Length: 289
Ligand code: PRP
Image (tube, rainbow, N blue to C red; front, top):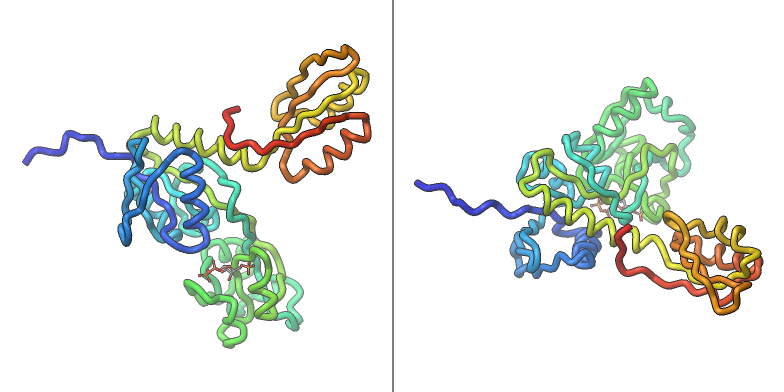
């Protein structure tokens, strides 16, 4: 039997369902990795790159990436930590931010995690929780579950739970309160230590990085009297440094700088206060810095 001489395509694992499925597919598409998932298929071939996309359960992605079934994977940093898998962290994707919290019933008199020694804790994150409690000298009994953790106090199988909190509405609906925060996580791109096509993996990382940065920054352009330029530059130092161009009127100049999107309004007000005019914010679709 002869072995197949063709090199294997780089495989990237994406969440097949759940809240991350759509946003991660959208991120890849913005990075120019275009594919069409045939109905019910777990594979799709990218049109313009030697890449195959595999659709997997988000919580299986860390271990499948560590085992080499996929070269790159999009998953939660919480799931990577919980799996204990040895992976290369390539990129924070700026989506899916959440915190992992130790919670008790709203009316509970527990005020400190140490009061939970020997008590029952329901969670899908036993490894992270055990380590966190151990660092505080606490040993508890774990009820390990894969979902619906938020109702376990009500079902009287747990005295506390450890679950992900995003908006807090699940906690409110189940009359729970946060006792302590265990960690903050977001969606990440991870890589196997022996990636099959390192050059293509690096191209994907650079492309995604361009999109992630573009999503969190805006481009601000404005005119400023030269006499106030130094002040303006300290308000908008840019990603590396702002671009300053001359204007027809030698006492004025034009400035272009990247600013954090969430801070744009406040920055515009500060620029206006020092005499800037024609201040324009533009969204960035993609960038290479
Ligand atoms: C997660 C988590 C919480 C909820 C928190 O569940 O387990 O139950 O989201 O989000 P919130 O603070 O915005 O209410 P998810 O919807 O991912 O489903 P799961 O129960 O299958 O984990």
